[in-house]
Image: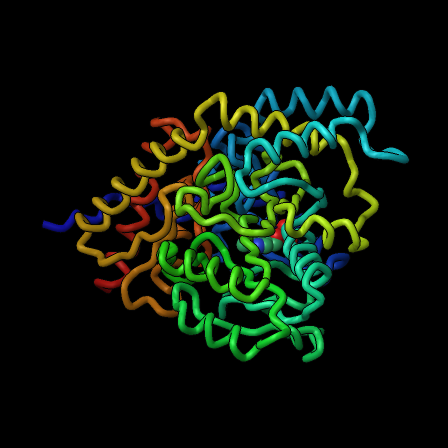
Length: 421
Ligand SMILES: Cc1ncc(COP(=O)(O)O)c(C=O)c1O
């Protein structure tokens, strides 16, 4: 028998005064009031726009309301907020210096650690954001091969520069002129796009699994990954893995190491420094010369504090068994949520690796039910997202999972009620 609707909190009891006032002020001085992926504008009104602090798996909004964090800043927070060893390393480096006339010694330490940790890496370059890293990978592939065309999967997200932003405003056809398109997990479509590029194929850009926002996620078919590797070997193009979202959350190394496929170049950011701003491009020797010749830089790319944080993050990921901890927490979460959906007689798809799950309701093309679910979960203190995959951190305790499941049970009840009304 389906669950009976529990007593639901009627009105949203959470305080919203500070958030409302900040939104009002922001509207005057920030275009659109907020922009980018952290704009709460497209989310249900239950979502706060402004966040004040975080610790472990918990975050507090500007009004002091607490949530169990299942978005982890959209990926960067992998060990939990304010991980003591990471913050200690960052503070120690900050006391020396952050932004100087030359990089700090810690840059070489980090490059060595990345090369030792990631199987396909013979060298590392550092930057700030994931878009820097994916863009650099394409530039290096072009510099090395002397060719132009990069293949990308239709609908995949690789950043917010004009060549890859999903929104057309301000983008010219020329910005996209050197792209070709294939369908994720469809090797024939990649071969066809490579054939169309012919002698001009510089690289194939691919994410570790299909994680396009708003859609059920699809794990990579190992045959597809191997096929892309063979395609690149046969044509001399670079196989470029966009590990920005998955890197260091699925595996301590490239996310395709368990699949047995090594890229030529890889893009990293998000979890690499547990929330400190850093990105990396890693590559094999075959692309070292191209990497040496491109001019890529930024005023803050050599800041030492995030590099020190990255060393502490990667070390803690290894020493604290963080990947396994995320797998355990993610499995408990998945099992609990899937059982709740069944008990409420709701048909759902819960897709992706357990550390990066995404929940949809069957037939809910416009995310109406997903929004009812997410809004109710947020009202009851579980910060999930209706149109983006979630992120589990290694800081999630069994108590945190219990609190999330208490909130998601009420969220399923709200969906059931919506359907029954
Ligand atoms: C797969 C992937 N690539 C690239 C990016 C761009 O990273 P950033 O927002 O740091 O520029 C993202 C960001 O979400 C991403 O998920």
